[in-house]
Length: 141
Image (tube, rainbow, N blue to C red; front, side):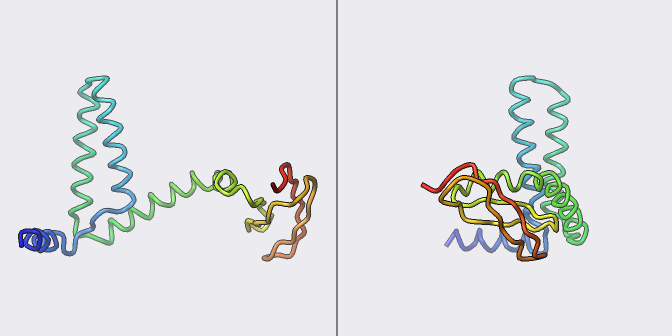
């Protein structure tokens, strides 16, 4: 019974609000890092940065101006993508050990199965039709 009452109050309070998006999640991470720094440094500047971060999190979370908050989140995602995208193939190679990845000159990433033997292999890009050379340093087990 109390669970339904609290759930209804929560829904009424957050109806039409921005809520949690990627930028708020990032600000939470910054807040946690600042809290850990504050434990070791005990500085007024770090405490002030914590307060500013908490205020901006609360403001973005409770804001009803969805257009501005979505625009801010898109700017943050574009910056994050610009930083992460050069390392995307490296992360993929670490996670997927059964395939090889090669970036074509047209921008397409080609995924090929790991060959049975080491050496130079050739693949064709499905997007532009260009033939690409892949050097296989490891072989299928």
